[in-house]
Amino acid sequence: MNGDSDGGAQVRVKFVTKDAAIRVTETPFAVPARLNRQGLSQVVNHLLNLPVPRPFDFLVDGQFLRTSLEKYLLQHGASEEALLTLEYVEALPEPEKQREANHPDWVSAVAAAHTGLVVTGCYDGHVRVHDAAGECVAALKAHHGAVKAVSVQRVPEKKREFVIATSGKDQTGQLWLFDAAKKRISALAAFTGHLNSVDAVALRVTGEQALTGSWDNTVRVWDTKAAVSAAAAGDDNDAQPKKKQKSSASGASAVSFRQLEAEVVLVGHTSFVTGVAFHPQHEHLVVSGASDRSVRVWDLTTHSCAQTLTGNRAITDISVNADGLVLSAHPDHCVRLWDPRASQAGESLVQRTFSSHKEWVSAVEWHPTRATLFASASYDGSVKVWDARSSVPLHTLAAHDGKALDVAWRLEDAAHVAFASGGEDKQLKFFSV
Image (tube, rainbow, N blue to C red):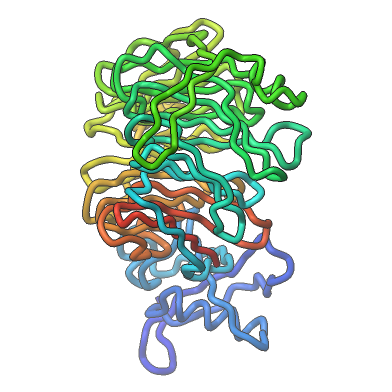
């Protein structure tokens, strides 16, 4: 490191970016070694001569810079004469709360469709649908007891119809059709056969297949194609036999309809299953996480476990991105990043551990379009927004009084980053940048 005019050390840097609209000279030059990302951001803003300054983040060797340049060089044993290549990206502003929707009990499950539609599951047994403005437009008694998980997908070629899957403590999963034009939830089918609480559910993007994970230690695969096709063709399932259920004190009733049996039962976990996901790239693969401290990759062509990733902490939720990277949430306050391909290279399956929450991490979810962005929810009441390239969260939001139980990204449009969360305070909260 060289000295500057004030007697401080300097470091030679080169600024690069993939965004042509904010590109500056890539000619190396010296900057004070004491600079951190805020100071470097000022340098880039000066070079760009922007009328309104923008905050930038900086990556060195694929990881966000979270110290001064001087400390980074010391930590990595880099030469004082080293040329640091700094890739800069626009920093994500802090999300702000936009609105909230009250519920009569804990909001235990949240899912969002790409239209901005948000579906919640509540401890009062109801499933509720909220429009992009946050208004509850439909509600139905879905389960006897708490709803533990929800998933939603738009019906292919139907702009205003959505398939919803729910699961609950009553040992069942349920399949529904939501018609946005009529603001109506219709019953399609019930998933029967689990022997304990069903704490995880996921729909394939087409809505034609569902996954459930249960406290009976099994993962089950359900063929929902016939039910969804009939609904999309205009059959509201009136031809299906229905059994009358006793009404609750509020007058609402849980609907009973066509019962489905699982087409595949995947056995291998030795404790309750807490997270399930379809692999985004490989249609024959599904992923599950469980309290037995393992993530399992299952092959639907052979109905067997293709890979078991074993960790040292119980798992409370999982999420899988387009590259097959798995995020897991844990009671030990951490989120972990797994790469199933790492074993082939002799590397650790757990690539990174993200520590910032103060209590049990209840939910984690990759952003559907931004490859490295994810969110987590915790019993400490916070929702954190992370970039997998940073060891510390981008933002921490005091989202709920009491436990934050679930979080889901919303895709209103490509320009905005938005999500919704539910919690012990009986509220659904909407946040966006």
